[in-house]
Amino acid sequence: MSSKLLKSGLIVSAMTFMSRILGLVRDMVIANMMGAGAAADVFFLANKIPNFLRRLFAEGAFAQAFIPVLTEVHAQNDKKQLHEFVARVSGTLGVIVFFTALLGVIGSPVVAALFSAGWFLEYLNDEPQGEKYVLASQMLKITFPYLFFISLAGFAGAVLNTLNKFAVAAFTPVLLNVCIIGCAWLLSPHLQQPAFALAWGVFLGGAVQLLFQLPFLFKAGLLVKPKWGWRDPNVVKVRTLMIPALFGVSVSQINLLLDVLIASFLMTGSVSWLYYSDRLLEFPLGLFGIAIATVILPTLSRNHVAKDPQAFSKNLDWAFRVICALGVPAAIALILIAWPILMVIFQRGEFSINDAYMASYSLMAYASGLLSFMLVKIFAPAFYSRQDTKTPVKFGIITMVANMVFNLILAVPFGYVGLAMATALSGTLNAILLYRELRKQGVYQISRSSFIFVLKVTLSATIMGGGIIFYAIELNLHESWLKTELIGRLIDLSCMIVFGLFLYILSLLILGLRLKDFKNINQA
Image 1 (cartoon, one colour):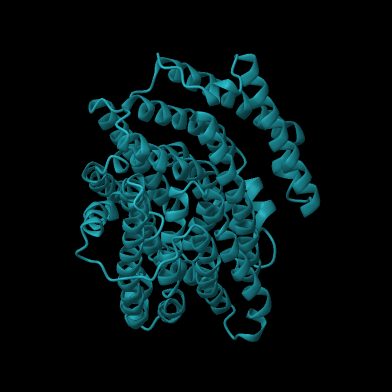
Image 2 (cartoon, one colour):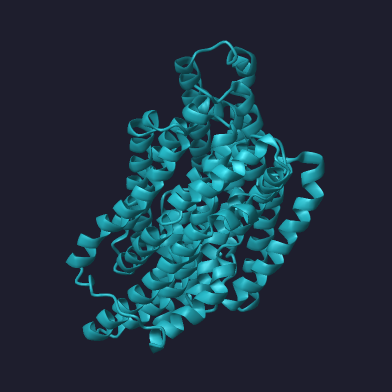
């Protein structure tokens, strides 16, 4: 089973890698157009709110509640019942997200006031920064319909993932990036405010992602006419599981929204610096953490339906190993090369060297919690696959309250960097609580062999980090990069990454780790 999971994980990672690369290109275009100025702050806010709701209605809470029930229905081998279930879920979800998006469009001034209170107060006081509130409320009218399209696209992706067709849903985000880049290139020169071109790119990208997946649903025989089914027993089961999951699975996103709310009271650029650093964090998180979580949820659901706790524990232990092997070195590398990577990727046009410095501090803070964010992605499905949504919710509430406390403590002395630090700390707390409960319930405990595995990974990553520091000092990168052109910086950064990766793999081999350690689970 581990070999199949590894293959599925590699497929999702490959598709996600393509999406993340285009995502970086998209962010480079945005940085070149707007840098970290007022218009950039506004677009990131207008994009973040419907994206937050997407995590609830699409691949987040909905998927966590829908996939286990779909797996149950699919296991009964009753095509008529399966078609009826898919039709009623799609119809019910479609109606709910349609009216949610409609309310968002109509009430965009209220939504903008809630999530950018700092800008709203400046608007009421007739201060210059109040224009950011006006732009945000206008832009939300364009970006909110994205919620409708992407929620149904997420539904289609969840169905295909349950059928082990992971590549389609993993590739779909590529289309969003293509649409945003295309609108930025073709539409922005014709608009008085170029940021609106990006908003139209989001709108178009949502529609294209949904349309792209429909032929694959048709081929799988599950493109059925939607029906309203609020009281259907299986739909009731999904929404019963989903209601608490709405909170539990989206804690990190709620924390990020709170960061944006507080950042609206800070200096111009704070929202953008947090965005650019978060985007770089999302690269390894999406490439590794979300990819593994995507393939592990349907598998754990099947293990639970088959009443096979041993396979459940082994597959979760496999996911833990892979996450640690990828997450530990990624976190250390991001902390050490935060400034160089921001300079190479974003510093051009309106994005200044000062913006690269400022964003690097929040990136280092976020990266300190990367492993925790990735572990939450695999520990939470261990509850959802067993149709237990209450436990993650309980911990979600604790984590969210802790994040608020951390924000209040850290935002005053450290500003926007304190907000990133608070998010990392609350993510770590969430991971610890989830694992402790899994162990307490006897569902999963880190095996002795996996503990030794993680020690070897940590030592290898530390050696890698030392090598990167030595490389940077020897070449005096901090001083030389201020005078070096983009090509020179790119070559230096690539060499540094390759050197670090070589040291990490070499150290793993010397310590006795082999490919079989990622394929076979040896319970102690």
